[in-house]
Every structure is written in C-alpha cells, then in structure tokens.
Length: 142
View 1 (cartoon, helix red, strand yellow):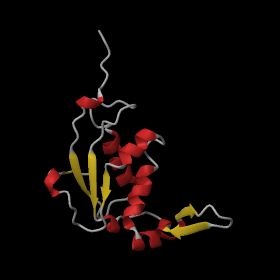
View 2 (cartoon, rainbow, N blue to C red):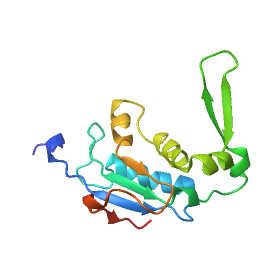
View 3 (tube, rainbow, N blue to C red):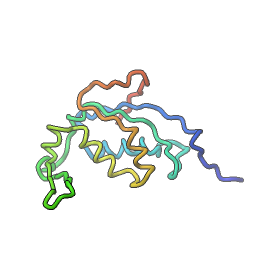
C-alpha cells in the first residue's frame, strides 16, 4: 500500500467569513490560522498550502482578557538609531483594527515562503461589510 501525498493541483479552496464581534483575540486567531493552513481538511500536508480563504469582519469589535488593552505592545523599528516605536493594543484597535488580527494570525503561521503565501489569503475588515460577495463565502461558526 502506498502513502498518499497531496498535489497542489488537487486542492480546492473555499471562502469562509468570520464575525469577530465579541470574540477573544487569541482564540479567533487560532481558528483563522487553522483554516488558512488547511489543517481542518483530510488532505492536509505541512509542505503544501491546502488552506482556504478567510474573510474577517467587525475586527474593531474583538475582545481581550485581563489588562492587555494597555499592557500589550506592538513594536516596529525604523532601522535608524533609537528608532524603536511602540504602540499599545488600545491605540492599535482605535487606528488600525485590521492589523491586530493580521499580526496575531501571522505569528501562528510558518515563518517561511509557505507562511507568506498563506497570509495573503486572509482578508480583514474593521466594519461589517466586505467586497467579496462574488466568491459566495460561507459563514463559519466559532
């Protein structure tokens, strides 16, 4: 008996829409990462992108526990001396709520070419509307 290996041409991608209203950030991000990687499918292979497209709406209405709104910081550096910039989660949710979910999911994907390909299938929107009606996304219950 031979071992079955998935070929990239055999992968059928679906579109899912998730509502982030009152969802905990980390638990939502793990569900999204699972869908993007394709681990929910029986044809999953760690070396092939078998995942689906994921649309997240209402990103501005996520929930976090504890004092993370003020304690959790996002860092970026300008590559110049003393160029470190820090931003709290509260400020990120006010200005760029999409980046909060994208950052959490990016940390859960592989750190290589495959992970960069997977993150492109994630579409995050702050409000309840999205421009992907033509793909007929299915609602995904968390």
